[in-house]
Image 1 (cartoon, rainbow, N blue to C red):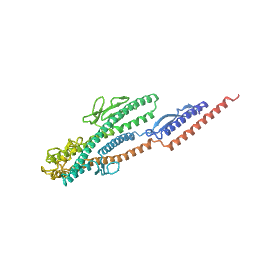
Image 2: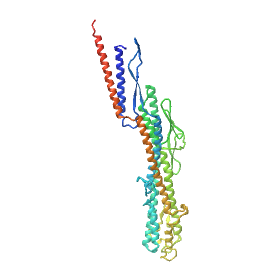
Image 3: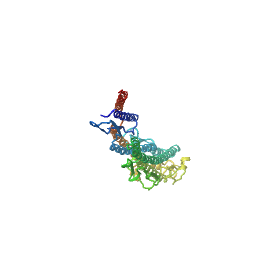
Image 4: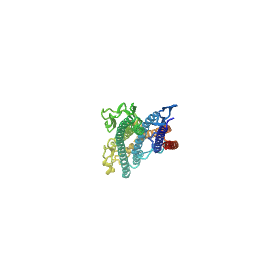
Length: 472
């Protein structure tokens, strides 16, 4: 057996090891509410024995490593599913903005939790019906200035609504572009931070010989934050660094930030993403960046195109019928609407100040004739070839129904994705999460072991005192 001084060394090693165990348990407890933290464990190992008279003799215990409890497969899966979640969440947000900009109450499509996404009330749908109803009312008294003014007022309301909806949808388009630019900026900050952490991890582990657990936690959090913005591919190098590629383009190589992301106008105000140095346009496959772009260039663009088609065809068909009519003063061949799209449609300025100029009669000099007013009223139920053989109202309803279905589908997918995300997080928490009960048990265990080791040192000290004070 080792001598008294050897036993002192055994006690000293034990004190150091148990103290390290208390520190690790304390670190775990301190981070119990930190979602980015992976719990740590102290690895103890028997110290190298020495040769004694009875053979190899123990020299105590050494704390040799602090290991992190992580499942790299789960971490990779969570990053992948986080990109899907980011894609769906950004799409949902974009479609909700679009719905608000449309100014319609879509049945069962928004936050009401419905699933059908069809039907509407208010807004342009009512204003379209209001115009054709006003034309119909005019047929009962074509010479009535009151009825004529009602037609003009309904038309002005409809035109103003077209203008406002187009303007609001344009604002949504600009907001989504700003979101793309903001996400690109945030992604670049994360890429830079990951490259910096790669450097710190490599330096720390090369110097200490241990694992930089806390730095790896920070990097993992940044990787998951980046995954929410953009889908990427990663590879771990032998020195512990993580290389990152987006759409096949290497951005982070070890400690170096080789390239960054850049938003650019691809034409018509469509902001896309490319690499800054090489200028390569990126075909993104996930994350909030792609979700925003997909909603902007998909559902929002289709909605704006459909809205413009309805407005343009309304202008054309109403003006075609209206030009053949006569006003109360015998004038003809004027236009009812001016403009060409939802953005600039408006009622002929001459009508706003003088309803007698409304060309409602089909016969010159016959004020009571409502032939043109009737033809205009009938346009409301006439199927238009340019609108897919649908009426104006049906075409517009179809446009907003598509929006409702899109939002409903995203809501459903997001709900399903949340289940997947929660399941993976629960699995990771079972591996890496801090258990208060377990850490308290470890804390008591290491505390008692420390007390016992201290008692060993005290006992050996008393024995040495006896030896020193022995009298020959």
